[in-house]
Length: 315
Image (cartoon, rainbow, N blue to C red; front, side):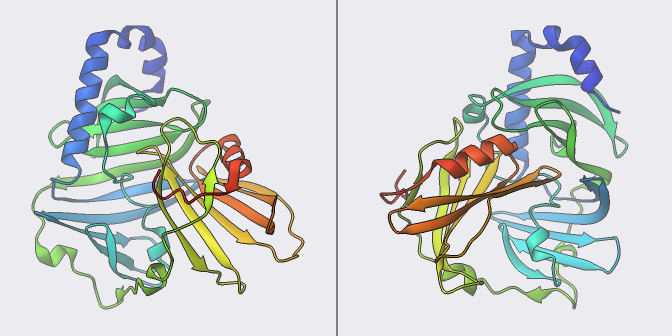
């Protein structure tokens, strides 16, 4: 059941303070539920006109969070995570974990997010045979995307998530077709024979210090992480910075060109955009590439705002 038309019809009524307050409560219940609920189920993922189906198990064994994701289309492939860190993965699956998770699981802070997003209840629906309440997470500016979340009435976990652009067009969909809370045991989150241990050594070689900073970011975006790593394609080092507002996130990659001739580029596949800009610095030209699930204009403005300067790690 699509509830966007209901939102259009009832938009003024639903903006009443009582409904806004209830929406804030629902967002807080979602934040509280994400790391406290064990469940299993199957869901479909739609992006850029393509579909895939997956099985998922989550086991909460306080303080540990175990997750297993199994691809159901084509060759069987899986990923196992512990507290958000990949433990093992089938070939080619590790890079897809964030893309095909049932919800962009992160530490939500509704009070802070309410400065950048407006939460509104937009109706009731059923997903995977379970009653849900539909919640619109609408950005307060044009620099980020909005969501439509269908929260399970029992667990307050999202059984359906729609990522929408600034005109309300669908960019990405997660939707459970089967969902069972609880009833998950340790054996359910163990990887199979094809789930190979993943080494994090390459990720840990980078330095956390970087001289790069951004002169402009959308309101609410902060530096989350940064590192300097050897480039896989040259002898130069690549600076990586990650920025986010608590929901949206972008990565910035900066690599010296060393005299190479490279053209600016921009592309979009579903919700993910990539913008590359050549920037001149005192130390020579660099290529700045911004990748993330934000509007193209936002990514381009961030790319053009990057400056070489004081370490931003303490921001």
